[in-house]
Image: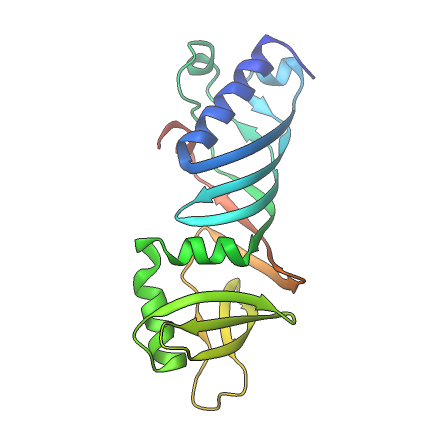
Length: 208
């Protein structure tokens, strides 16, 4: 449905998404709600697709998400304040990375400790230089020319790097937001796709 309140809600959602993403090239937002429900601060759900996203220091090629029902504060929305959530809600969907996205994330200082850790454990090197995606596998390359191929596995909702042809190296967990629970990982062509769900906490849309 459309209308002034839905337009305000859509604008509030867009402002929030812009505030929590350091980069957001393209965003399409489809919200589902009745006039009566919106007046009561209730949205039946929503769908989001985005491209060129940087969220929590991760560069993403594509994002596709669908939410459970959302309850929000109507008063603040009418006053054109930041969107405030009444209750936490769940989102489900998938994110896609290209090799360029992975390397952009690797260059972020936030991931330096993790990158140095896997370079040391898997390659016996000090620094990880780059990632590559080929033959349905993830390749890691150090700055001194060494490389190793890894499979990616989802175990108990977490993502793990599993070295191939390396008996001495155990799988390494990839650090994630504890609110995220992964369900599947797929490397296809030149892209890495993660599917899962996450919880958005109450009040999160009102803060950067």
